[in-house]
Every structure is written in structure tokens, then in C-alpha cells.
Image (cartoon, rainbow, N blue to C red; front, side, top):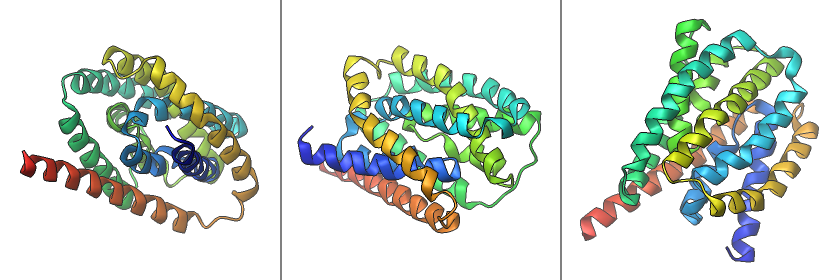
Length: 243
């Protein structure tokens, strides 16, 4: 990775981390489409790995407000979703994976725009966790299903519960990526390169949380993700036509 490319990646990750620290999710939503286009090797494993320190910090800051019961049910579903996704991506070619990634981005955007407010109970938590685990393992973006479930909660409960889920989910997603051959020494090194952006972004979020318009930020993140998904799908379609 050249210095200019690394600088761009760090800026994107820093912005995404600041957003996630302020509203509960957003780092992979913003980073995955941009970094996936610039450096496909950064998705999904390095993004998943670099998000672990971030969600740990956000969880600690909001630990008193976590919905532990709902999170535990969601993690049950996540274990199944991550396992299924691990078997899926292990059998995919790069072109088919990009197609899945692009579709996954657009599905995530649609889910976040639905505005549906499901009740938080065992069934909805397990279902949201299952879908989130599958999406996080295949595209690094697992936030929308869980964010949709908790969208009606107040800020600290939303941030804390999402972070608790993301941290717990990493214990299922990381082994699935390793088993699928998508996680090794190179991915660990790439995630380490992104870590300064994560830490700086979290530090910024502490000052920005009370000053940001969450609705505007959310729409901007969704727009970036939708654009990235469309570009990826267009690239795959062009490759198929050329072939």
C-alpha cells in the first residue's frame, strides 16, 4: 500500500470511527465500500479486526446502559449466521464474492432506510443476530440488522448494546473468516495499519457526540454505502460482459 493510499484509508477509517463512537455504528458502513474499491484485500477481515478495539472502547463508555439479555439472544443467532457465511465465502470466486459484497451493501442500505421498528424480544433478537452475523462475515457490515432492532432506544443504550453485540460477534466471525481462508498474517498486518485511524476517530467522537446531527450523518453514510455497492455491481457486470 503506497503512502497516499494509506493516508486515504486512515482518513476514511477515522471518520467512520468518529461516527460509530457518536451514534453506535458506521465505521464498516462507511469504510467497506470505499476501501473495498481502493484495496479489496482490506475487506472483510482487516475491517472486522480493526473494529474490535473500537467497539471495545465504545462498549466501555456505555457499559451501564447495555441490554445484556437482548444482546445474548442476538449472539446466539450470530453464531449460526457467521458459520453459514464462512462456508459460503470459502466456495466463492473473487468475482462472485464482489457480486455478493455489492448486493450485501445495497441490502444493508435498504434495511437501514426501512424505518421499521421491531419489538425487542427473543425471536427478533435471534433473527437480527443471524442476519448480522452472515452480513458481517461476508461484507464486514453487520450493523444494520441490529441497529434496526435498537433504533428506538436512547443514545447510550443504542451505542452500548450495539457495541456489546459487535464485540461478542467477533468471537464467531473471526474464526469463520480464518476457516474460510480469508484471515491470515497479511490481514493482521493490514488491520494494524488502520488502527491509528480507529483510535483518533474514537477520540474525536468524544467531542462530537453532542454536536452532530445524527440523521444527516446516517444519510451520508448510507449514500456512500449505496454508491459503493452500485460501483461494485457495475464492475462485476462489466467484467461479465467483457468475458
